[in-house]
Image 1 (cartoon, rainbow, N blue to C red):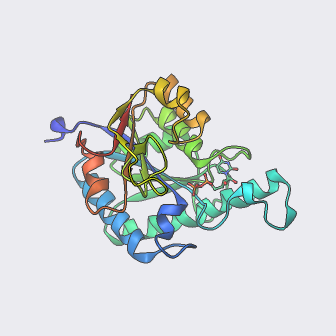
Image 2 (spheres, rainbow, N blue to C red):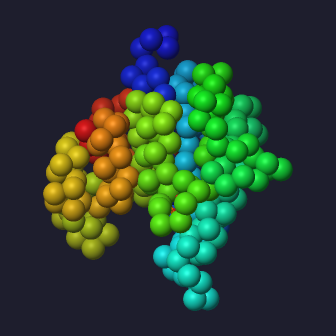
Image 3 (cartoon, rainbow, N blue to C red):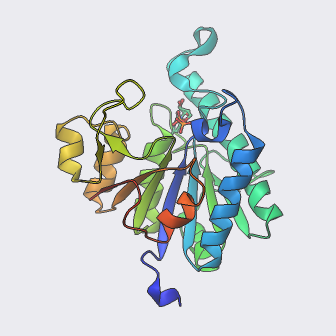
Length: 238
Ligand code: UDP
């Protein structure tokens, strides 16, 4: 039945903000479990899944806590993503899913270093691969890291999990009448300055023809629906 799958290999970007749930900081165990169980369900259908986790629930470089310079603050942010990566790994393994964490900054006691060909091999073996430490470089975001890894591993689609239903014409939190876009082109996103991801990330997806699907992770079943190719989910950008 694998032939019926819309996507063979996908990239799922889970932000730190998603992981913190309503707590405002750290990891909400319920959210972690929910994400893990849906990823587990999608993986059992035969979709190869790579995940990039953010770190904003612990630390965001732009906040420059205690007057740190930007590069140093960004390194702290990258370390924060590793905490999320190994927690998500643990939740997935608890559900019997085979996983590997690969980090862009070497820390071999807790994870493999990022090796592209090895990551692809893990995916081919049905292991969920979680990429930590972003790109390993300051001045980038984890959205960009996810777009980069998606291109490197030849992902068929990029799923951006958010707390809202997709891309709106204005901020839905401030405007109750905000209209949800169902379909957009990369050009629309760039020209209209629509808030999806930073421009570097969007441009990477555009240049490598990787369709982006923005969807709401807080609605039960959505991660699974998205990965299995439900066309009615969120906003599709291509
Ligand atoms: N970061 C970085 N380089 C990367 C990816 C991330 O320097 O390639 C740092 C940056 O400081 C960022 C932090 O890690 O603020 C956490 O990542 P991000 O804010 O993208 O996480 P999210 O918003 O998804 O929680």
